[in-house]
Length: 346
Ligand SMILES: NC(=O)c1ccc[n+]([C@@H]2O[C@H](COP(=O)([O-])OP(=O)(O)OC[C@H]3O[C@@H](n4cnc5c(N)ncnc54)[C@H](O)[C@@H]3O)[C@@H](O)[C@H]2O)c1
Ligand SMILES: [Zn+2]
Ligand SMILES: [Zn+2]
Image (cartoon, rainbow, N blue to C red):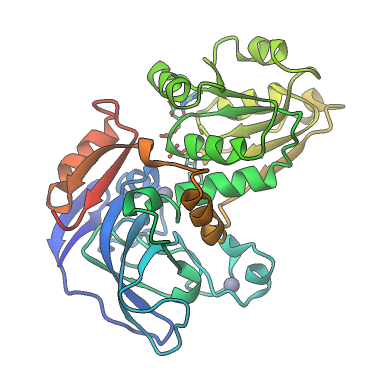
């Protein structure tokens, strides 16, 4: 089968590999129908994910059809259309039982697919702990609608859940990339009074205004004044940082009002400073972390009910055999790209 592979730092290559087989009675084999490319794939390519194993098939956002299951798998059966979770988790350890699946203590736990074990930019993928990692897609939901459920939509859902958003709040979201827009969709479900989205890229702000006319948009320049003018209590009640640029962590807490929640979704290239003397008396609560991606059944229901729709993020579609070109477009942000769907059947 064809599999897009991390060969060495700086190089991915489409290779012919053996089709994966079941190795454990909790595994499933999924025939991938659609996969996508994530910013994290670019981080692997550029060597900034030391855990990534050379030779591994990349890709951790995908949907497909169950082809085979081990004898201990009970939640899905061959023929089921499923989402695949970016995180592998056992469901039984202390952290999993608390819903903190990102910190699952299983040796296979965490972000393994497409990093430490073969992922989904391929025709087939082996998914460990299939009862936890797979969710059946409702018949009324298309593969395109479900494509981001296991990764960036799980991230947006988790970020909105932990941010303690109230109905009267002004919520600031910094970053209108794919993850920022998924976060925006999940924040909207909390019905805050006002949402302000900030991005440095005017085209992304224009996309937000087109899709969500009730959302305010702002450039980073003058952001604090803009937020102050649109908030009741001297800043955003909740600020979510989903950009990951060198200055955006500071922007997030600086635009937050006293006693606000500041949620850091972004990952940074280097350490960030927490200038506590400057923050004294602001009494902020910071929330950080990797996504706990264990709410996929709920997000699939929200999609089925028409409350979440991430299909406008899919600006381009390529066949797996043309994935090189898909990466070129995604990496260089050509042609207004936001997300790319990669089809394995074309
Ligand atoms: N915590 C997690 O588990 C988790 C999961 C997924 C993604 N992430 C992180 O979330 C972040 C966003 O991911 P993405 O896939 O949307 O990536 P992205 O790079 O496409 O999005 C970042 C957005 O921020 C904007 N931006 C850059 N500099 C800015 C600035 N100075 N001010 C305002 N906006 C600015 C960019 O124009 C872009 O639209 C990344 O850091 C990613 O690593 C974290
Ligand atoms: Zn990802
Ligand atoms: Zn666990």
